[in-house]
Length: 144
Image 1 (tube, rainbow, N blue to C red):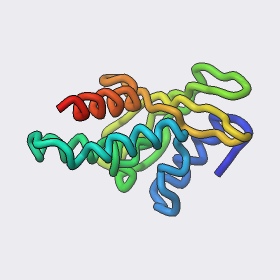
Image 2 (image 1 turned 135 degrees about the vertical axis):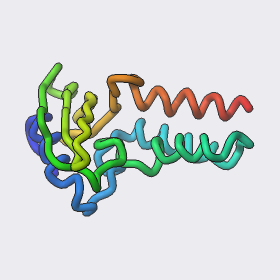
Image 3 (image 1 turned 45 degrees about the vertical axis):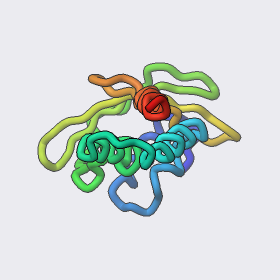
């Protein structure tokens, strides 16, 4: 699924988003994967509201963040736009439509490691960095 240009890599991800032939964890950076694992390890250490925790766990652990956990509703990519690009990093804006008519958009922060593009973070319009949210929630849980 690797391409030379980061925008082609992102297009390829969405081309195969609904075929479930690969886990999203294959295309994220080690640091993102480690943050998810650290969060997961705190899951059973808290006595918070289980319904609220389940929503957070779904968003951070189980849902495919590439399309907000809605891969079964994925319809089409409307826009892939390069915001920044160097030889080893890129920031790509993606807007797509779901079969229920909803539109979603986010920025994918990419890095190239050992010649392969990977997603280092997901920047959401309303909530910012998904990686920072995971790290903050993990830190908060560890303080409990």
